[in-house]
Image (cartoon, rainbow, N blue to C red):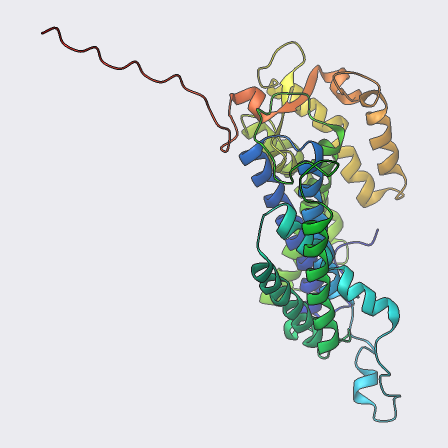
Length: 363
């Protein structure tokens, strides 16, 4: 993994390379948090569609900026050189990709969010035009020239892909005998043991916020102030940010969650109760798992961090309570925030007995 600070790149390009994935991670975290606040845990087909919406958004963002160059050397040679061969058009793979990247938008608009045809086409057209604008302007002018080809044909194919997704949801995924269940979730209390996929997503959010957040902060400082840091600045800043996110933030929160865990509405509880874990246990757990993983990503060979994660997860995949090795050592368990606080999903329908009618006064 490359270090998130490259003094050889222009400051604006360096900031863009860090900010684009950071915005994707932030958007995904907000999407997952809203899902869990409104409906509780992701489960069944509605949960899979929620994840599909997350993947579709990330895929569309990647399509709009791909390939995101980390430098500008030789980037504009073809456009600046009159002797360069002209562009012959889009290849078959690029044409298929332009339609496929927006197909989930139409499918989700109909099946998950229950939008009509014209509203869906308007959304698909706006997204296709936005992606084309980003590609045609070199990431809205950040790069000196457009590094990815686009055309009205790709925009039209994106709209066509949106229409195809809506039609698939309308005629192939509609509710009825032999068809899939409804696509929108029903709210349920979030009180069970969180699934490993949910915990993994929280870890991915933590990693993305830490890595790209640090890179973005350093790049923006260089862009706005003209500061030229020493080559080992990132290696010093990354561990400090990791300690802040993995140690200080959980100690200050009621649910003892990291930023990624808070986005997935997770927390840490004592192994023998549903109370928040003691702070000293949270501190020891952080020193056993997230801090060593962060240090391994910065200073050690790239394979060491996955080895540490696998070692921790070796017990979680076989135990009913999904306790990892660090959890067993420190006496804590990963749980949901609702288990610790008693919160209910905001879309949960609560049944209340009707109040008795007042008795008629004796006459």
